[in-house]
Amino acid sequence: MKDIEFATLNLQDALDLAILIEKEAAERYEELADQMSTHHTDEAAKFFRVMVVNELKHGNELAARRKQLFGDGPSRVDGAMMSEIEAPEYEKVRVFMSIEDALNVALEAEKKAYNFFVSAIEHVENADVLKLFQELRQEEIEHQEMVKSEMKKLPPRDKADIEDYADEPVGQ
Image 1 (cartoon, helix red, strand yellow):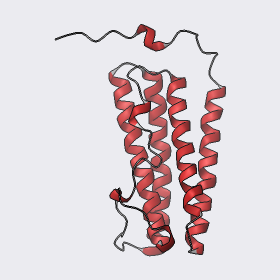
Image 2: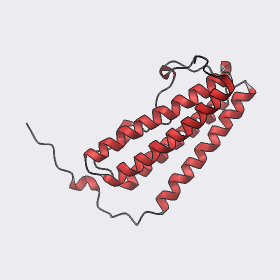
Image 3: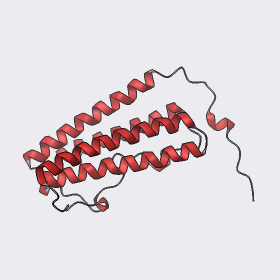
Image 4: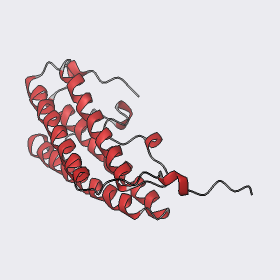
């Protein structure tokens, strides 16, 4: 991953970076949803698909804003400049996940994105970029609240761990 020079970002760069962050997160949630469907953990898959829609919606809003301000000008930002800023980490996902597990993964990803923007803000010099990153930081708080709201709707968790019911690996 290349280092992002926050002090030199202009608004177009910042929007391009934010769009890439949302795209990466949507793609990761889609992967996770597919994995959960394959392993018949449908509640987790359904929630991850909700997150795909949320991330795509936010990315599309940012892309429309970018197009309105800058047209189809080329981007100076690419995916090599960032990695897993908001995307859930693969290491946090298990084959058999409950809906609660999926919500915890999403909450951690939203906190990670929030921390990214908090850290980035310290290095931003452009006022427009600062305003955008402050807005994105606030949206990450709202996303965390959405996930926490879903968590509150869950019934009390069974004390048994779902891994207790997973099959042991079979030699081939």
